Length: 386
Image (cartoon, rainbow, N blue to C red; front, side, top):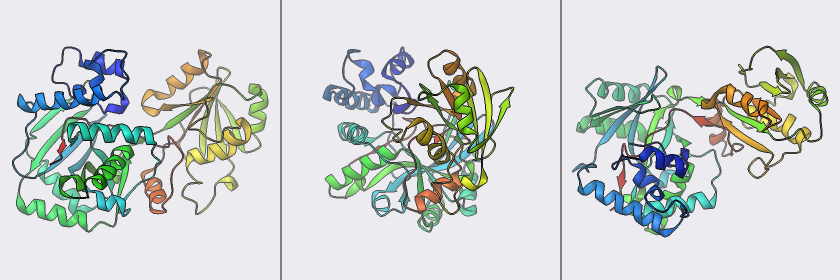
């Protein structure tokens, strides 16, 4: 098992896999077995991934079940557990928007996933899905998870990964019927993996195992979205004093003796000039009936980043950077106090209900709106394409 391919740099993956010949990083980050100067998109990298996967199968490190099963997958982190279903999801349902997205993908990242899947002829990293919490499904998964797990591993980041095989035909049928009856599923994490699977399915005529993609679906109430904060390299010609004066036109501004962790969507923390401030947006600036406009990042963008900093495209503007909530408020303060950044804004986390409302509206969230923890492991389950 290994962290997802996209949360480690090549150097970090090389270090973590050192002395671990069966680490799944040899499949998901195969450049670690080649010259450190190689481009991760080089064809030799994808070829090495295929070779390493074949070795794992030949050595019995990875074993393919003889017939299809579902798997219950539980993540436990910081005393909180989420229990979901590992399965393959329908590409057709994704294309028809029954499996709904909330994020744009980039061609470069999509192309990388397509090349990886085609090279190894398998999907080795699951898409994380959310389903509207359904008592019948929740009970079926909990019932299976009362047994001793087939896999029980606590990773070095403290996350416990457990898995149970669902091999009872009645349970499989009931789970299938219950999921088929849902109006929609929602992509939480893994938009590029899902988009790549759709492209591969089209290329292969939408038939066979390529008509499905690897996924783990959790009840939405059990999922954790952390804050995704912003740091800015300059004050766009302002001083801390003039910036605070401008903010006071739209926010109630109050000094804080400690780092500010927002407790509502309209509350923000600001670290600037060695001090913290609590910003509370004026209620009339929160739009009603607009699932995107009421998001914390949308409120910050429309009332701070765009009018005061001139930042209109967070994907391309080099003056802004993003800090996932797992790093804590201390990381925001460190980057400001070091002089690397001029200001930092802490945000209230996006709520699952808001994510689902955006997806239901067929809309797209601003970039870097969600940071899910804990992450699914690569190598826990894989989907071989026939």
